[in-house]
Amino acid sequence: MPKGVKMEKYRPKIHFSAEDYIINDPNGLVYYKGEYHLFHQYNINEQIYWGHAVSKDLVRWKRLPKAIAPDKIGQIWSGSAVVDEENQRMVAFFTYSEHETKRQSQGVAFSYDKGRTWEKYSGNPILTDSREDFRDPKVFRYEEKWVMILSGGDCVLLYESKDLIHWNQISSFKGNQESHTGVWECPDLFPMIVETTEEKKWVLTVSVNDGSPAGGTGMQYFVGEFDGQKFIADSNQEKGLWIDYGKDFYAGVTWNHVPKDRRLMIAWADNWQYRDYLPTSPFKGQMSCVRELKLVQKEKKYILKQLPVKEMECLRTNKHEMKNIKMGADEEWTLCDKKEVLELDISYPIEKIHAQTFGIKISTGKYKAPVDFTQEFLTIKLLMDVSQSELFINNGEVVMSNLLFPEDFYKVKLFATGGDLVIEKSIIYEMDEIMNHPLDGDLI
Image 1 (cartoon, rainbow, N blue to C red):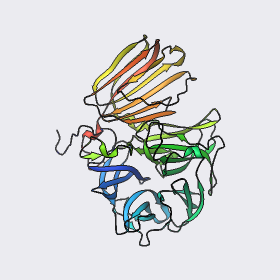
Image 2: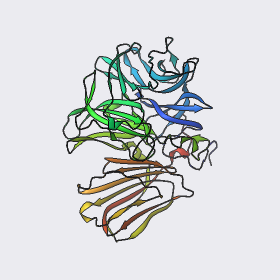
Image 3: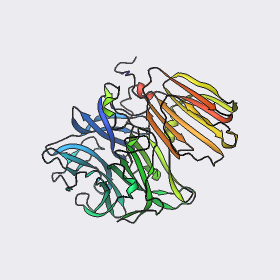
Image 4: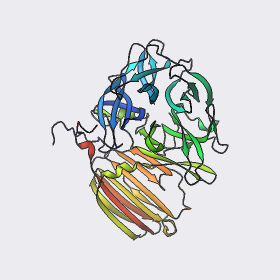
């Protein structure tokens, strides 16, 4: 084993995790001068910092020293970062959990060296409120001004600014009553071009701290219009749609300033129901893969699609492929055994599915999601990484993300019951386990 490499049992090998201590929400996602920045909540002995990592390809991450530290005002909670081109700097916005008042307020800090060091604004906090929940600022550029969206507990609040310091509230949004199964956190608001129609829509995402389809924390999204002042959801999409139907995809936000207007998201792969009880050491918490978002129109609604970024294909090594295979009723096949990291792509012709139940078996957990069977093919992509699974159905129209803690290696099986079916194509890729190796200091 190379010197300095740690081999904890459940540490993911192609997903980001901190070397030690506790991480949760991704923060400050921004692309600047050739680097993708991933800041994150970092709990070190109950002191909350922003941790920091950078990447050139969204796949290999270099961990950097802690970025923003708690101070006399409070702990440093979630937020965002932007590039202030005019002043040639990065600007970070974060929530203070204030020591004395126990209230939540917003602070700002500046970096002139690509995020390596930060100088907090002497007038912090820049925004206060009497609300119990007032946190998680996401800032973005809109024409000639800056806009901030943040959590107000049962709604999101929108503010505007010309100078990134002085902010005025312009509106709020709360969906309808069916959207409120828990407190809203970590909001995001961004434009997207609808595939095939080239129509421009706005997507508002929120993390809901209870009541997701699989139980506990989850994420919703709304599609509508934003005119620089108000977000208005389309009349048939006032109830949020779920971004992920698994247990472990939360606090996801998107990168600012990404080249070619790609919309990239990463989330905390965990759930507040059991975060403190995970059987991992010396670290707790890990991130999802980076996903590229697309917006499509389907049955008069707009659907957010997600797939792992194409950059992850560089991790593929050995390829095992089957084509046009008939699977009999009540058969079960083991596709692979004793693997910790893999990608599986499988395609079923819908008209040749006669089975009552079928699919991929990797563990005993069962979660439900609505799936469209009116298309020509049902497609499934599965990413498995030691303690983490991400399932993408029909090119990412439906996604399930879950943590798994097997006693031994995975056995990935295909099964069909109550009838036969045809598998048009099944491909398994073994994956280069990049997190097993120390990152080269010259990488970034």
